[in-house]
Amino acid sequence: MPELPVRAIQVLADAHPKPSHLYFQYGTAGFRTLGSTLDSVLFRVGILAGLRSKRLDGRTIGVMVTASHNPEQDNGVKLVDPRGEMLEASWEVHATALANAPSTDAFIEAVSALVQSARIDLSKPARVVYARDTRPSGPALISALEDGFKALGVEARDAGVTTTPILHYLVKAINTKGTNESYGDDSEDGYYTKLSASFKKLIAGKATPDTVVIDCANGVGAIAAKNLQAYLGTSIPLVLENTDTTSRGKLNDSCGADYVKTMQRLPPNLVDVMKPGQRACSLDGDADRLMYYYLDERGQFHMLDGDKIAALVAAFIVEQVKLAGLESEIKVGVVQTAYANGASTKYLEERLPVKCVSTGVKHLHHAAEHYSIGVYFEANGHGTVLFSPATQEILTKHEPSTPAQSTALNHLINLTQLINQTVGDALSDMLLVEVVLAHKSYSGVEWNSLYADLPNRLVKVVVGDRNAFKTEDAERRLVNPPGLQEKIHELVRRYEGGRSFVRPSGTEDVVRVYAEAVLRAQADELAFRVAGLVYDEAGGDPAKRPKEFI
Ligand code: G16
Image 1 (cartoon, rainbow, N blue to C red):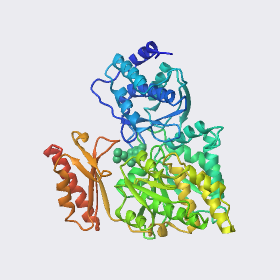
Image 2 (cartoon, rainbow, N blue to C red):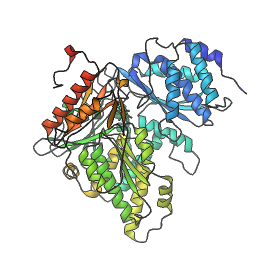
Image 3 (tube, rainbow, N blue to C red):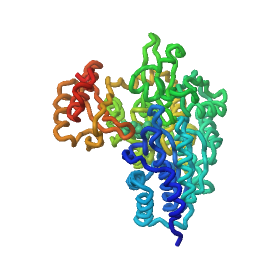
Image 4 (cartoon, rainbow, N blue to C red):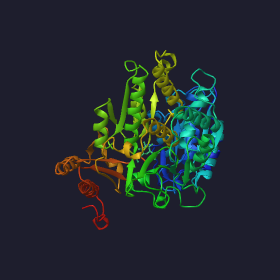
């Protein structure tokens, strides 16, 4: 029975010491904090990824180095399981334990304990594919990660600088290669070919979509969008904006999906680019979120967020399932989080089964797997559609009895190719939206009028310890600090159509407050009042209390 290469781990671990004053937590999307503090975490994640692969019989694990929508100085790392989905929850605990072992000896002890408790057979191979986004701290962190691979003897494949969804795609493609579940060629070329070929089939015979402006957040999405553009050719005119991936300080700065969603306005540098009636969309820093919007004839901004994407896409899929004559066999459902606009939930619940789960793609993804076709989107634009294995089999075996059924069936089959079923993918989602708009002959206006959003506001509150905030009921109720939920409830009752909830962020050191109400001014007031309650309750310094926290 081979043993842990303790000596190699020791030597390399000593070169990546853990900062003694820091505690690292594997949160909503892996480890995420200031890039300059993550060296030891990356080294240790390299070893963890190798162990995870050994545990799964040498299947390939993904490692993505990114901090997505966070500011440029942050960075992060997350693991991707063999089917392309997020790391299994029980291993998040191991990740946190390994990252916080105070010394090299303690780290080796923690690794040995994991090998024992998870019954890892060290004779198995360890295979990992890894990538990073465009952050300046990326290269140094990758080299720490590679030291981790070296220490354990991992066979590692460098996927270079690419988007999070492409890395997820690669993981699934590598692990299904040569099987009858093959997900596609395990290369970027395979990814672009798969998306562009299915897109072209889906819009064949439809009018070419209007030009779409893509705000690439000055991140890795700019590189991927440019590559994709070459594969799409003239099938859809795209104008790429915010594509500066080399100047310091530009990533996600006053642009990108998170900016648009939280500010509820155009990125300032698009003001002169966009014409009335024109559609545009924003990616985030690693291109897994998508936010659409348009300016109306009066130049007014209208946002089409993840909830609107879910409504558009779910209705289209239901329609195609019916047209294909598969209504009784294929059940479509939608998964949302508490951030979903109340109006979207009402609209969807009148048409389909809808489930609410905690924030984080992993929660939505697992819930969506319970439907034949599960549509999941977070309001922030992170989401996709899952076709269960049984559904995919029905689609390939079903014999249509009319030409109309055959057309709809082909559309559904092509959708399974167009949609990145491993994780939210801004570029795949953008093409999906354009397909539906082309089929429905919708502009942004018709899409937006599916339902009217309730005015809402999202506020961040900086507190001493966000871990003091605990929630239940898919994050809709606070159970800690005691008594705070009752105070929030008391406030909410005073606002027509009022709803508000509070939860600790898993990616930033803040507590998030969401509120909505029938009137814009009321939604704002409710959000800031609840933020004030949170600030006071969490022991915020009265001298630093933000003025807007009424
Ligand atoms: C990540 C997760 C998303 C989540 C978001 C915000 O997104 O993948 O599921 O909605 O963080 O999470 P929180 O409110 O806990 O900070 P991304 O795009 O940053 O990777």
